[in-house]
Length: 217
Ligand SMILES: [Zn+2]
Image (tube, rainbow, N blue to C red; front, side, top):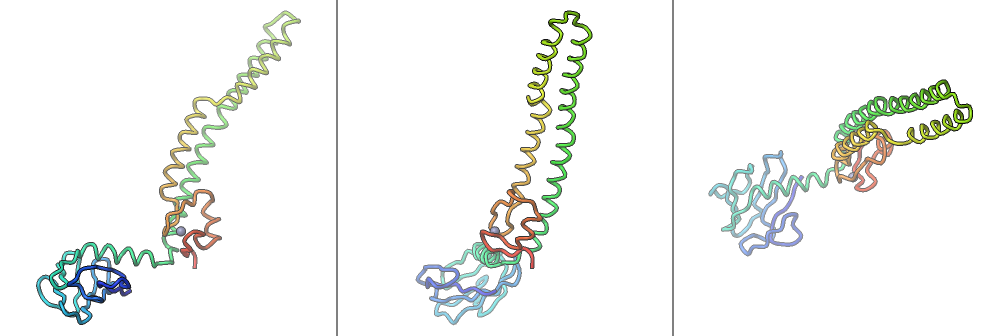
């Protein structure tokens, strides 16, 4: 990929300095640590580490001057890499990495549900049943036996609906799992959250609704 740098606003990178040419440099991406710069026949010339160049491979550590203007080389690398990322559309690889993140999350949530939901419910139901049986055998007064049993049943039923400490813990744990997965489970290009649906749903969509990044070719 190639970019232009110069004083004119139609360049990819604009540097509004009098000594910089209207179109001063052509910049080619080679790797994340190498750019190929080419002077486009300027009056004030281009220098790398003090030497005049017409075409030169540079690293972020090189000192580049456009005439007397010192270029911020690190900034040029950052800008070029960002432009390349912005123009990239195929995020299939990055999207596939989300599959593991989401299935790990689902596995943890399932384990949490299994451990924490059924046990307290059974305990509370069992407690109510035992109370009713005890009342039936221990309370001799016929007039009181059934009203007390009914009261125990109603209280027991009500208690069953109240969350126990372990259920509250479970909710806290689930919340922190959600927070963790939300940090990672998002569009690899634009970062929009994918948390509203499972991985398979998005895989069937094949692209991001928001930024149109392609996920599956
Ligand atoms: Zn997106």
